[in-house]
Length: 81
Image (cartoon, rainbow, N blue to C red; front, side):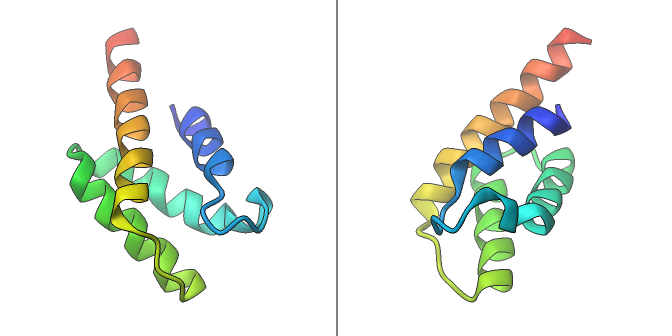
């Protein structure tokens, strides 16, 4: 699940600067994915992580969209086991 979530996050590239520049943030988001189960909570955390690192704001709607994808991966992984 971690690799798949990382891939989803790499493809997202919210600031269009290249996915290789988000390694630290992706790791933090994947860590939060293990803790949080609600898409809006995860979205707020994603927004906070990226804003803290890049000093740029991402609209919450964009974060919600990616959080739904991540939560879906999480639940898919739980059902495979």
